[in-house]
Length: 154
Image (cartoon, rainbow, N blue to C red; front, top):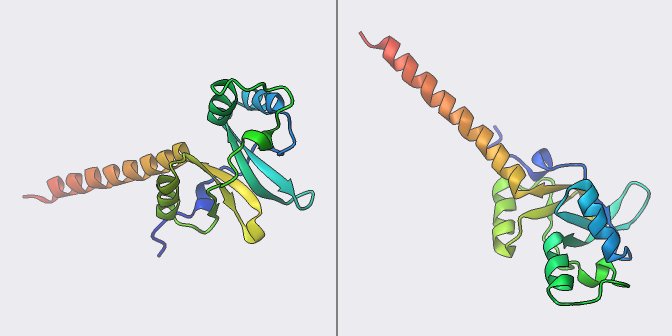
């Protein structure tokens, strides 16, 4: 019996990507259009396979460009993105994912498959949704057990 969900089972397989060479204002526009807080920066190996080379968050733009009073014209994603990316593998358990997030203080992690190929993204919000479902199932089991106990008593 399986005791923990794996990252690949709960990650979002639709990932908004960027490239290190993309203009920072284009990346910000893409975030706004897609309503996402981060872009995964990739290097393409083939038409269907990309490896993660960085992560660009809205906070990176706010702190690394706006708050630092840097001129965004001519700046590229690669100038601002986080290059020391916390990644998790598809088969990593939910507990391993949470430990990695806690260790690096991040709320989103790219999920990779064989040869470090990008397969999805897992956000803390996704984890919370899964945990909420599991807690609801526990509450229902407790409630059902209490109901059975009441009907079994003389």
